[in-house]
Length: 242
Ligand code: ADP
Ligand code: MG
Image 1 (cartoon, protein in one colour):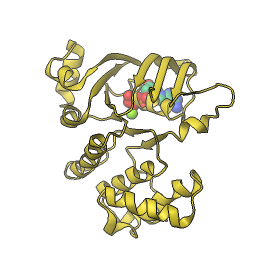
Image 2: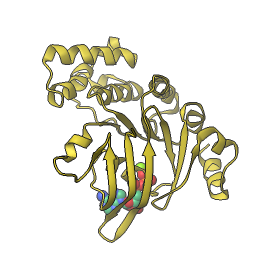
Image 3: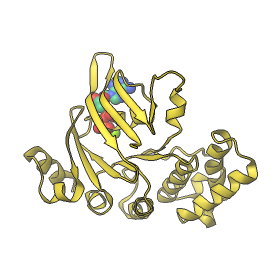
């Protein structure tokens, strides 16, 4: 069964139409990279998939649960996705471990001990066992983003969504975050990633989507699309970011 299914999904803010007839199916284990010019609707699409925004029309199903269906609450869908933002949005007054424990405690209703075990395992997975007691201000941007990834993983989402996770980082800190994401991809984590890191897309993505003006213009195998750009518009785009 597909983990994400959109059918003619649309999103408008007042008169402004931001997403137009998005058809998208993502199956378990797929690593999808989403690219497109600024303002093309990438963030809005991720925010609709995580139900941070409500689509104005069309169908959205996450893990077989359909938004708007009887007995299905928006938060039932929301908790199936883990979101990682460009700005890490960690709670500054909480240690790395406490940031990661929050989801298991609040969303999954686990005990402090259970949540701590999960947090420590995830901090180890992102290579930060020795930073568990540090506050965000004591961590580098790359470390903060890895904590944010651990925090998103901690609610056991079916799909991980990344919105330009390395764009706010100095170039020398991007690699450590991309390596963590590459590791998740290799373990079979289902992911949709908005990024300009085309080398990462080439290595980690199974599939590449190109958005322009609120529509998915291309949807294909990542390596094939990069080797043979399917349109002049796309070739020009990757020429600029790559
Ligand atoms: P991208 O992530 O591809 O740069 P966005 O999804 O952020 O694009 O934005 C797509 C379009 O939607 C832009 O024109 C943006 O101004 C508009 N938009 C995004 N969020 C809102 C909002 N909350 N209210 C009004 N317009 C919005
Ligand atoms: Mg964006």
